Image (cartoon, rainbow, N blue to C red; front, side):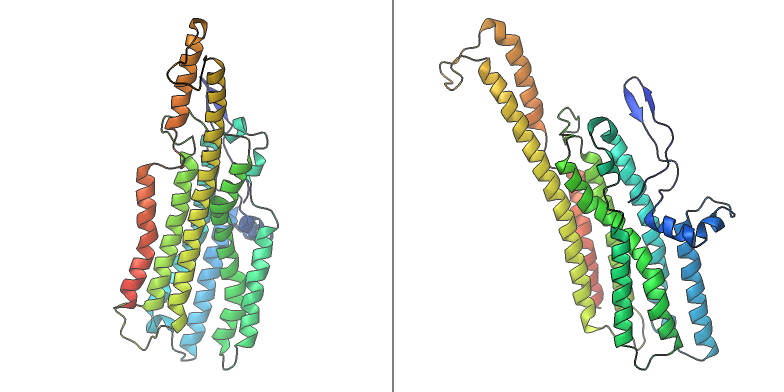
Length: 359
């Protein structure tokens, strides 16, 4: 991931506020700034990040060139055969917008959880993704696409070469890698780093989820973007209500199900890691408080004969109050409403896919 621009942190009456005021500086922003899109962004109104301009310009221009060449050379347009392919640019625009939105939400979540105050090493949580990972994924993704193209280019026309050797590896792949990096940072890196950090659990959280509601909410929001992408993919793949020669490949359903299962596994991983972290912290704190309580009680192991010395009564009362706070803390980082919404969103893509496949 990458840092974000913020207003200055202010403190009043013990409260701390730090608000993200500009789009985060993502990996794709830094790359496209080198390609000149930073210069372009500075000269147009709207304060658009370079990655937005890169996506808009490259997707629009590549589509215009492909459509124009096809029309001039009487090549059938894919949009006539399957109008749902018009969703493809929207998915790309949504991917880069989602990356910025989720990155901003992530840093706001870290601010709400007061990571700067509670962690000895806050940077490991504020920027959890290794700097080399986006480049590695881009090289792998572009390399696989180019290798597949070389092995499968028999009978291709000009537009096929343009799409497979330029558009897919150098436009689609960087955009999807950027979204994937932000998604993985939320579902994998952040929960793992959080579980290994020293921030502990906020047992006085009035919502009873250990102060981890922001990250639990973000896990749900990140998956919502996956749901939108899967629905778009299903519409493009199955093309409902289109009377044409469009056929669905045998692998389409398998690919959809594989992606769906992997993304569910990512959410399950985040929930499991956070649950284990909360459970471990809760049990350790209860054990510590129980040890303190035992030291204040005579015959602490016998419910029939135990006694609390008069001079220890106030201390015991405070310890029991703390034990009640800890015991009441959930071992999952979300409220019931968050869980119900997440479960519904998990079932939705597969339900829509099965519906479209049988139309």
